[in-house]
Image (cartoon, rainbow, N blue to C red; front, side, top):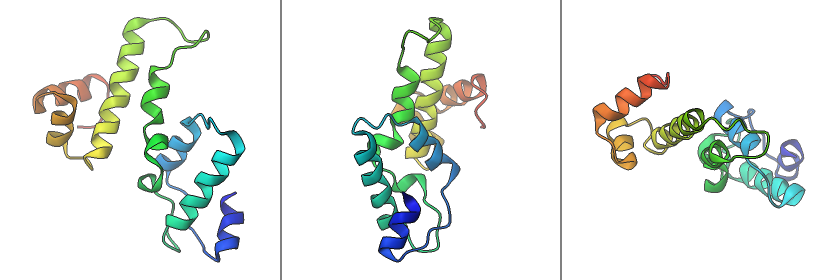
Length: 129
């Protein structure tokens, strides 16, 4: 779809950033194909020509889908509460860091944690500090 919309708009994009691709793959697409096409069209329109599609160009609902998918439990999900809580916590920390553009003090405030509390949780979850 991206290539088709690039051709339609006479625009060239340089691929897609890993974080953007991960968010697109994690999103459920409740509107199925029409929603996917709409998002692809929007990404091509918003992306500066010659640049890669960045995660910040994605609609908010797509960017935050990783938190929702981390919290989703279905019949195939292992019901290990510690692991499920850790997955949600890890996803929330990543999202807070993304929203704060890596500012750990701001991310900690957004999460209702102290800066040291965030650092300890990041270390526990193997997230870079």
